[in-house]
Image (cartoon, rainbow, N blue to C red; front, top):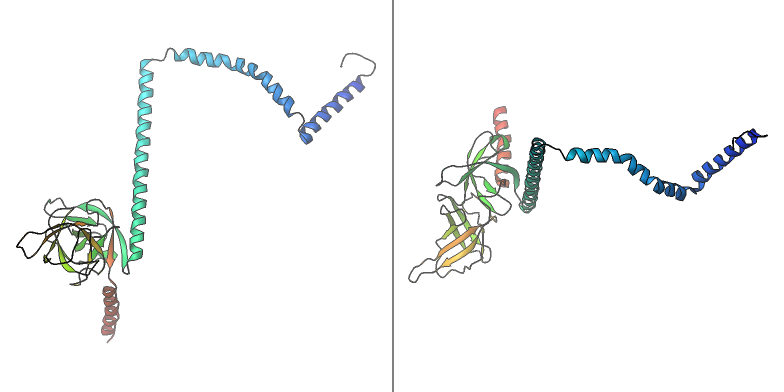
Amino acid sequence: MFVQGPVPGFRLFLVILVSAALIAADARFDKLTPVRSTLATGLAPVYWLGNAPYRFSDWFSGLFVSREDLQGENEELKARMLILERRALKYAALASENNELRRLLNSSEVLDDRVIVGEVVGVSPDPFSHEIIINKGHSDGVTTGQAVLDAEGLMGQIVQTSQFTSRVLLVSDSSHAVPVEVVRNGLRSVLLGNGEVDQLDLVHVPDTADIREGDTLVSSGLGGRFPRGYPVAEVSQIIKEPGEPFVTIRARPMARLNQSRLVLVVFQPESRERRESAEPQTTEEEAN
């Protein structure tokens, strides 16, 4: 088109006009998309041939990888796998903790008493003493005698406190006793620990008492140590011996004594009222 001729300016104008028309058609009406796709398909072998030398050199160099390089790459992959496995375990632990917190929150909604969430930070090394240590103490308002629960039921009571930790005596300890009653009929008795983490003894039950396997035992509130109505255990075995006035009853603790990591420390309403009523009296006496 640009060969020497009588009117080269006209040819240049014609080229500019056609170019502008094509640009407008592509921008406004998207008419050149099929043409562009066809051209890209036709140029695919060109792209492949342009990249062929690099791919060939990479393949050729891979044929002569040393054993040390392979071992190094293998060790690196193993290290990455261990890191990913650790993260997976951490996420699984977080998910378990989240589920436990949900169960604790659901349990605290049922209670009328104020509670705080504590974490088990230690276990007594003495095999004959069933005690745990939680990370709540004087600074959190915890005192001896308070009930401790997990998401399933009563775990025990606070027997010793420090500024930041407290020692909890579990219901399975041989020196622990809980006054309980049967939910079904209100029959009262005492539940004793026998040193077994998955078994408790219900004592002083006459052979004529109406009690069955599967009955739920809750704290009766007698003695003022434990608030009434907390689930403690479920009757698992009843043994009646001829001529004996009392039956032997085994019960399974509701709480997960050797598994729970998060616990609830219960503050009874009456104890709070006594503390609140005692504080103004002390202030008034000091003022007088």
